[in-house]
Length: 241
Ligand SMILES: [Mn+2]
Image (cartoon, rainbow, N blue to C red):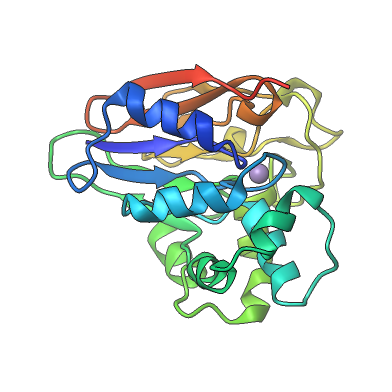
């Protein structure tokens, strides 16, 4: 079974509870994170280690990008909850792993269930050939300046946008998008399912072609996972202050 987990944000206990709830079998089942494994929550290093020890993978979220830029000396430190990660004895190893994570991934399957594209933020208007976009975004090794490319930033940061792909740091409800912008998925015309995180205020939702997995775990909402094989959603309670 392939499980895709929404924004974890350092909530290791909730991740472990979710894995236990779905009966995750290491070595047999496959684990993906929709990005923002870290940031805001209590145990960023623990979450990264857990995902790696289970052979899991992830797409880059904006919090991984920010943390990496800080670690690489390209940005000032902004987030105290990430201090334990920067101080971890295996920080170099964890950040090397983050650096080369993909941004846009086609999760194909031979089991007769629906293919899906996984991205943290969204699909930019005008991206028709997602395979070509993914080839541009998923560079290994990723050059440092690639972290600032317009395409990578959109994929990891956007919520509402203009028809031309302009966006700002809006974090509110989809119905309150700034003037001239709409949720990015309003412009999405592909037929493949897109699975994404990043929009905690929107919560878990699903349309014919889009599946949102960020249900605000770190804000006391829920941690949500989708099983691609069985098309099943499982949720566990989020962080309680
Ligand atoms: Mn995010």
